[in-house]
Amino acid sequence: MSSVSDPAIEDLLRELTPQVLGALVRRHGRFDACEDAVQEALLAAATQWPADGLPDNPRGWLIAVANRRLVDHIRSETARRRREDATASASAGDQLFAPPADAPPVGERDDALTLLFLCCHPELSAPSQVALTLRAVGGLTTAEIARAFLVPEATMAQRISRAKQRIRDSGSQFVPPPEAERAERLRAVMQVLYLIFNEGYTASAGQRLLRGELTLEAIRLARTIHELLPDDGEVAGLLALMLLTEARRAARTRTDGSLVPLSEQDRSCWDQDLIGEGVALVSDALSHTRLGPYQLQAAIAAVHDEAPTVDETDWKQILALYELLEQISPNPMVTLNRAVAVAMVHGPDAGLVVLTTLEQDQRMAEHHRLHAVRGHLYELSGNAAAAVDSYRTAARLSSNAPERRYLYGKAASLTA
Image (cartoon, rainbow, N blue to C red):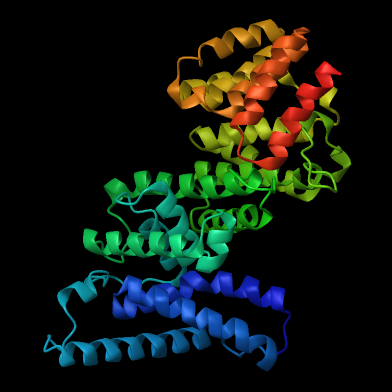
């Protein structure tokens, strides 16, 4: 046994979670029961290791404890079935996740990716994919996930339970998806990690602008995928995007938690190590892999991060990148961001013209960001009254308290 700090234990447990869960699922084939057993083992480790010290083989310790919990559960379930005159042997449904008998042996690294594919199963909704990924692969407790997404723990527990049942009912096995489905499933995994990061970067609701625990977890999982698939340009692009965005986190809020827009941030607070890593990743990906939307978004973030001051930002390059992004991955948020770039290059009136193309899009009509950008462009054009109206509308539509205060503050500053 060796001593180790609680934060180090937490990091180790999250790193080992997919390895331990993968080992159990390959042995027993019951994803839902194995996942519950692993969570119990993680809780036992978090309680015992700080007091007793780190075991010589932490992964083996966790597997042994989780295996005992699972066996106890199976024995208890079997006894209950016997009491109810049900079949005493494991049913076929208990082995839905068992790999085929002739499946080749797999390693820990394969397990991590297989778990991510399983948690992002197409049968699940996006919120369920996020919750199950954070629980089964990230090692977060149900309570931690519930707090991050501002829902009651019981609600999150039901969401996770339904997700596991949905996967079980689908008949999925604990094997990588067929080659024909692999690219689509990988896109789903990346989208889930992107959603987790975005929720941490700007919380959808609540009193905090940032949830650093979620951005860091998304980065950790993205690093895992990049290590497994080092030649995938979009995986590298996603990781680069996260790093380049996370680099600004310390400058995004004041000591009171209020929002600081990009144009006013103290760039000396930006993390240069993360910027350097992110720029290197996206530069390498762009040089030898097929172009994709995550790479383009990372390239845009890199242009922002490499500008010494806001006035030295290369907006022409950013606009060109957004135009290319809109061609290969059109969506209203890309158009919204392109409108800002157009305004910075061709003037605010030109940017406002771009915004008119979004007014009939029902996905954007009630989104606060459309009105916030319109307010910003009206302010740049000198139309204070229109800017105030747009800022106030955006504030009413925002569910995040720091964003709401910032937008009302912008409106107030123009009426003073």
